[in-house]
Image (tube, rainbow, N blue to C red; front, side, top):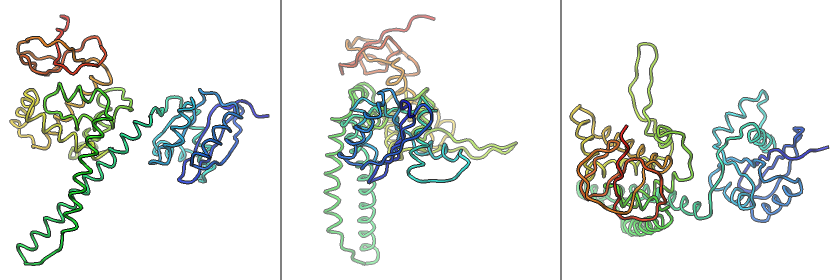
Length: 366
């Protein structure tokens, strides 16, 4: 006799959902549903018939856009939905002795993973979050396409100027104009959908624009990081070390994760180098030691990420509303100048609601 459900595993594909319900006695019940509104409605009825409690983990893989409908529907119904990286499930499945693979087997193993790992990443997205991330993905693709189209048009002009070869580019030029308009529209919409913290960063940190802050916050706000180094590694700006015995290889950044996010962070590093005095000092000091230009900009981007971790995840940096005159000082490595927007020392966290200039609250003496 089957007992209560302790874990649900869902293998997601474009057309269907393979669902495995694990009971307390480790028996499995397998069902297949369509990956559409009607099929997910049937899935919710099935879980209700199985008396699946809201606290029971419903685990599925992050599979592009195919998992979003079921994850969002189950989450809105009150179920605990865990959305895991396919790399994790792949490694978990490789640990089994038998190398069999079907959708049914995958659903069973995902259910086992959800039962054995209680601290998996929980799906907390809303429809607005999904819209913002979709716009961000489209923006990244459009900017890549714009770069390719621009290069093509410039190449055609060079061929005509140097060799007299005529390549017709009227359609490409017209397409490039439409791409520019779409990029502008996406950026404006992304700024509207970004959380309040993006506006605060753009208002108080010199060298960071609202568009750049919006990209970062939309991409990272639903993530959980234990420390600042984990955040740096997530975006691929951590230094990869190769060493064996007395041999030490060349160090380089790992470049893991979202490439568009690294591009925006590089732009942020450049803006901080130009407009933020504290970051300028760090840049000049590194250049004086003979560091490469790109290495210095990446170091500034990493420094900003550490600040972002303290601001958004740790909540140890806040911005207050009443501006006061302050003398030049340094707090946590960030220079504060009279009546200029500045980064504050850690104080008791307060609600973010105002975009006025911050007021410095001195740290207590050690």
